[in-house]
Image (cartoon, rainbow, N blue to C red; front, side, top):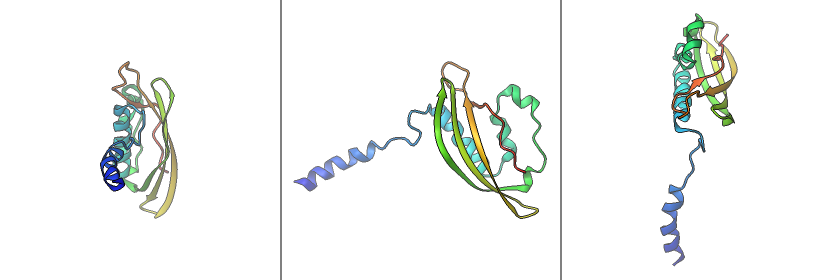
Length: 132
């Protein structure tokens, strides 16, 4: 009988697994995952597309990003709410400068901002990490 009850309850317990993003708005979670994918796959010039449209105009993409190969992207602290429309996350990015085979690490303190009332549009509210 106990085995039968366990078999009956187990699918419900598995289905109740919580999201790793908790109460994070789904649009924000999607944007953060996309940013992570961009960095992991080495399309570093595309990081600047996550900035606010106005800020994108004043930022020049640095040269030499093609010399950077990302070897690891680890979330050091999960997405946490700072205030309404502002969330943060910390990631640790390991990378190699290909021409010199130098291994480096950068700690990326991300701030994500949404100005619209629905929280549908998110952008990075602080500069992207520098790979030097």
